[in-house]
Image 1 (cartoon, helix red, strand yellow):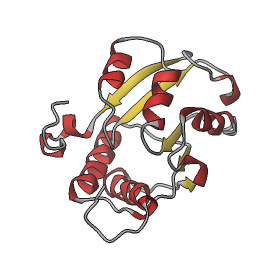
Image 2: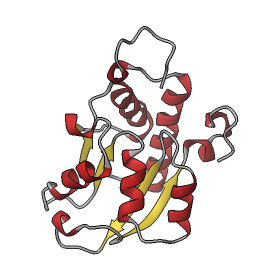
Image 3: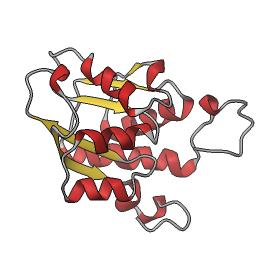
Image 4: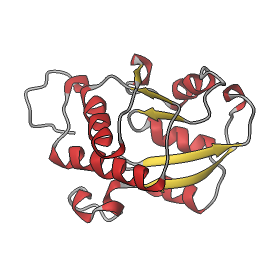
Length: 167
């Protein structure tokens, strides 16, 4: 996100050019991999709204539900939102902020190679897909998921790496 603009609050900070391109890169990758979502719950912060707009440019239309609880939420709040998800949905995308998103991924996923990668660096714009063998979203708990995919924007395009970032 950009820090140079006249935004008065963190909530109002827009994306910078690299952030907009990162959203498009993630959208392209999701489209190419054939990954879709039944439900999208997102922070209403300006930078998240703009990220989803970038993803939609290359992925296709998205229909997020904006929930103020996601803004800067800690992992326990995000897990509560997961538990509240209606069981008619099979695939949920939560779009939020670090450190909460990183901590949620680390909490839910079993220890493995991808878990180590998430722990090493979960940069802005990264996407972690966690799969669960449960009947209900309410059954999800710490260590019950398997990281199926972890994508960092800088891995899709080296130009998207933050200055000095070697991820």
